Length: 435
Image 1: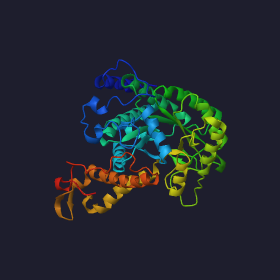
Image 2: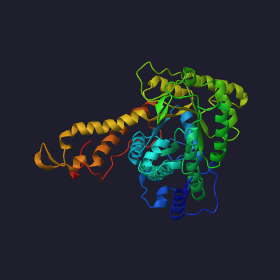
Image 3: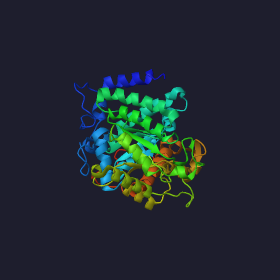
Image 4: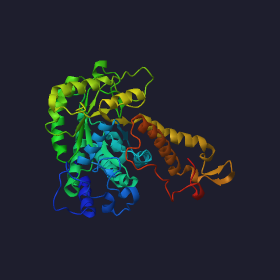
């Protein structure tokens, strides 16, 4: 793979912006020891400068988490009965909307990128042979997220979504980027990656995940693996015609994964299938069975005996295909150890709906550069300025994510209280439009 240019850029950036450390601290025990804002010289004030949050473990800090801080946050979610929304992003605008929503809801968030989303972030004009564009795009998104997460003053887990067998070179490139970043910063560039080998035989799935977990655990990274098939269609993968029995994982299979991965590291989560379907479908077409997760936790706890955790929830579960699900099913699944729920379809719609509503509101001002209902010579620049419709998309997405935070019982987690209104922004008095 011709990735020299990416890694050379990473190495140069690290040398330019980060101080060399005489000793490396294990990410499994490290405390937060540096900030992106300090390295880049970007101002870090108020909540951005906090070392920790009032309601969270001391290790959890503003910015991208990994190692102990990440595990402390996820364990806090499991112990306190909430799940963190994981939103698929494709642009810096969608990342910013997630960060804004997280601060507005006083909560952590997971920002994730698929291979297709990463490629789009890099630009469809860039050749993607050997996943060149997808790797460069994801790395670019990672640096953007690291820079801005601190500024919004929220903890973020930076994750990549579904990676089927054919896409493993993409994650290999990102792991190489994290290994290089770790040499200078003592932490990985990304927090976690998903390896989705659910279409492969379970033995092969587990064997490959073991190898990736060995590599990732050295950096303090979490591995998310998938068992069973998530139905529907997402990011070019169509499972809408798969047999119904493949949409439900068996407790014995989940225990097989637990038994194989735990000796390597406890930094893994399982996206088990309990009827999940990507996309939004008419009521009655999706049959979720959250109790599958409960049965698996009970089964594994019985196998562990005295070694089982006190809460009898040894596995961290992930909820895929959550868009359009009943809130009762979502919250039942959280009670069985779900600490993360993926959100993509609903935020895709909210982003588009924001643009659609903007166009409807200002339609007569968006038909030409000059001339509108206020006069034939009136300019329309402030209406077709892309910042206006994109901001409308962000505002609508923040509003939709507020619903998701509520559904996941993930509001007011940080203990910071309400966020103050942003100051010195382009508003109506300076030419901006109300959106």
